[in-house]
Length: 145
Image (cartoon, rainbow, N blue to C red; front, side, top):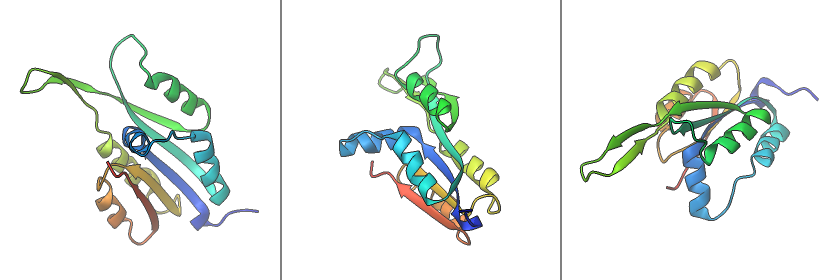
């Protein structure tokens, strides 16, 4: 059965925040089931997964997941994490994907492509974007961490 415009879904997942939330709640995400759940609810136009990666030749623990997601129907968007030294001399990584996710959601979803946009993001990161889309149905899944 064909889906209506309102049943067209775009997913925007902030990988780091979704991972942190799942870890804090004590479970792992089954990305195959997650995508299937939304496919059962409508036509998933795109499922974007945003993740920062560490620059370097050595693969990190995120690379197998990114490869799997890319192969299994997700559109993976990566950005190189920035390395810096904090005030106490410790090496840190800065890796927020919030701006990239918000810009992509505003440009790609645009109100006419998908009837529904679903976001998985950090606490309050996408409230302004959801408010801007107030004339469209927009689900915001906020991370508790």
